[in-house]
Length: 358
Image (cartoon, rainbow, N blue to C red; front, side, top):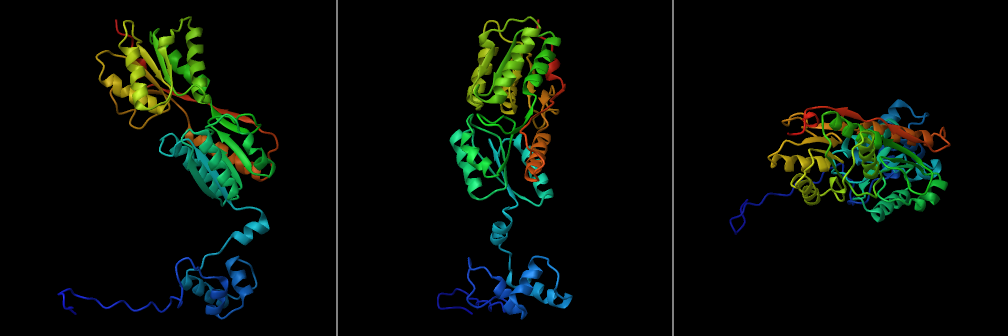
């Protein structure tokens, strides 16, 4: 019908008959509501909800119809108190947006799902205080275990949680000042292999652009770079090395300083995937041929011209190994913390095989 303003009005839809009178958002249906609708006792509903025997098929069907109609969901709080487990684990990453952590996070989630557990994750943004805040918040929510990529180098704040039985595995970087399981890539060996590969293709003036030196992976990759140069008897100039934040501005500045000096480098080892992407952009603007090996694989690396040679980590294997170790802790089959180191793999695609000009 039309009102006096000329607007058409539509009658309100009738109330759905199955919706309980007085039901409001935030007031979830209970087992008592289910029992009343199905015309059974509370214990019968409990048996159906928890998959216990002692209920006839006809009664179970009637209870299930009531559950579906009311939208009932089991409240696991009481079960948590009885069993001491929440069937959930926490994952603290550096940055959820970093492509490296996608396969790692997915692998942890798959292992958790196989064990009937929920994964809760968050980003520390490379901030030790934020890391501690996230870890303790997850512990306050009674997660059974933690997989942590640490931002800080002092994890004594976790000691009370470890003593309370929170299973914990560190991944990608070791814990600081506590004994804990850790799963790492061979950062030292991978960087050494990448630089040795450049040396084998004739390079002597090789630059290294890495992350902040306090970060374990950055320090180990720098150590691998130095070891390869020393093995080849090549003195390293300080101007060939640059460590710091991996934002595009800082990395671009470092790359340009190495490339536009009177005696420029002829090759670069990029310390992680973010550094690699920025160096590729700088090289695209450069009028000289410069060899490049990146640490960590990047998307579309094989489609560029030339393809990008990388030292690849298996991020999924890191996550899977850490999560499997976590659930072995929860099962009580692990007693002594261990350090597990996974191999890297050099993938030659063209950019690391370019010879030096001249």
